[in-house]
Every structure is written in structure tokens, then in C-alpha cells.
Image (cartoon, rainbow, N blue to C red):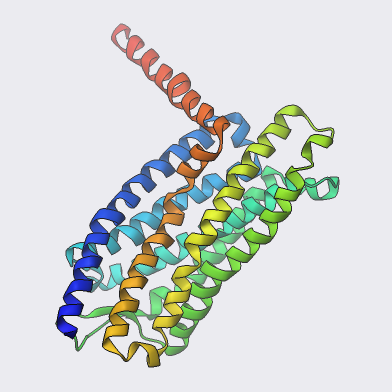
Amino acid sequence: MATTSSSIYASYIQHVAMYVGFPVLIAGIIGEVLNIIVFMSLHTFRQNSCAFYLLIMSCVNIGQLISGLFPLIVMTGFGIDWTTDSLFYCKFRQYCRQVCALISLSCFCFATIDQFLATCFRPYFQKWSNIKVARRLCITTTVIWILHGIPCLIYFNLIPSSATVRPSCTITNHVFSQYYTFCYTAVFTGYLPVTVVALFGTLAYYNVQRIEYRTRPLVRRELDKQLTVMVLILDIYNIIALLPYPVILVLTSVTTITQNPIIAQQISFVSNLTSYTYFSYFACPFYIYICTSERFRRQLFHVLFKIHLERWRRRKVVAPLT
């Protein structure tokens, strides 16, 4: 009975990897590349602090999809685990996953806070929403998270497994294992960013309702409204996407629950599903921007066809003459 149940869940996980994981991966990379092109091509975005946070977030999201989601798809969909073949890859993958996730979530929290500051009616708060502060914050947090990830390079190792012939890439230090589960996964990539974006997102929504009644330049007012709507809808989706994964991971760490083989298989299956919802956070921003902002759709069309396509055509015409 247990063997049959195990094979059924394994088949489900394999199908989820191929029919859910691959579309999320491909769509996510394409979407984040388009985000980068739009944010870097328009002067309006290049000088805006919130757009700068979203630009950095898009860059590290690509790294997270490649280092985190792609190996997961290969592992669960095709049974190929590259982490068991190389100690370097075992350590480096975990390091990249942690650093990219924390930088992305930090930038997303900064973007939400920035929109609260930008839409605030007090000039003292508004002055903190500027590109110089954004650059300094991104550099500082990037350095902090790069140093924070060093224990992954030390404590992730290949350990022989009694269940399989090949070793497994696991944490070999008990204290770091507890920190990784309850602090990094549950707090830093789960409850803390969700709390921050929920709080400041609500405050930004309250501010943007009153923005028409203030004397602000029309262009700046429209940009603030556009970015606030984009960020707030992304807030709502990401709260739903981020919360299930740390909850399931904490459940799997409770040995009294996972001692039952049937329940352990069910939790493993649900954990696999929540992994894809978690990675959808890194893949969905572009599509949320497209769906929620008509102005962003026009900007995308302008960047792709009016700027880059026209530039490519001019080069194609000039090339034979030279």
C-alpha cells in the first residue's frame, strides 16, 4: 500500500514539474528580461527610486529562477540531481538561492516602503524617496546578504544516504540547520517580508487615495499612482505566494508528524506544490504589471517597437552603406 502510494505521489510530482515548473521558469525569465528592458530604457523609470528597486529585483529574480527553480524541475521531473555530483555545485546552488531570494525580497520591501514615502503628504517623508537613497540601500543590503550566505558555503555538504546509493546535499551543522529552517526560511523569506509589504502597502494605498488633492506635478503624480498600483497588486499576490512554503517547511521539520510514511508522502507532495507557488513570486511581476497598468502596457509597446525596433531598423539600413 505504501509503495503504491509513494509511486502515485512521485508521478504527480513529476507531472507538476514538467507541466507547471517549466512554464513558470520560461515565462518568468522572459518576463523579467522585459522588465529590465523597460525599466532601463525609459528616463522616467531610470530616475525613480521605486522603479530602481523593481529593476534590481528583476535582475536577481532571474538568478533565483536559474539557480533555484531550474534544478528543482530537473530533479523532480527527470530524477537528475546535480547537487549529488559536485560538492561545489551543492554549496554554490544553496548560496545563490539564499542571496538572490533575500536581495529580491529586500528590494520588494523597499519598493513598497518607497511608495508609502513617495505618496506621503509630509515633505520630510517624501525626501527619503529618491534614487540616491535607493542605490545606497541596494548596495548595502547586497553586501549584507552576500556575507550572510557564507555559512551555506561551509555547512552544506554531501552526506551518504541510507535510502539511496548517491549522497545528498544537506546541512551538517545542527545549529545552522535550525537557523536555516526557522529564521531564514520562515522569517526572512516568509513572515517578515509579508508583514512589511502588508503594512506599508496598506499605508501607501491610503496615501494614493488622497494624492489628487495635493499640488504635485502631473507627471510625478501619474507615475506615483502607476507604480503604487503595480506594487500593491504585487503585494497581494506575493503574500499568497510566499506564506504557504515556510508553513509547510516548518511542518516537515516536526518529526512526530513525518514519522507516519503516508502523512510524510502527503506533506512532501504539498511541499513540492508550495515550492512552485514560492518560485512564482520570482516569475510573476511582469505579468502583474501588464495586467494592472495600462500605462505600463503602453510603455512596453513604446520601448519595444518605437525605441529598440526602430533603432534596429536604422542600423540595418545604415550597415550596407558602410
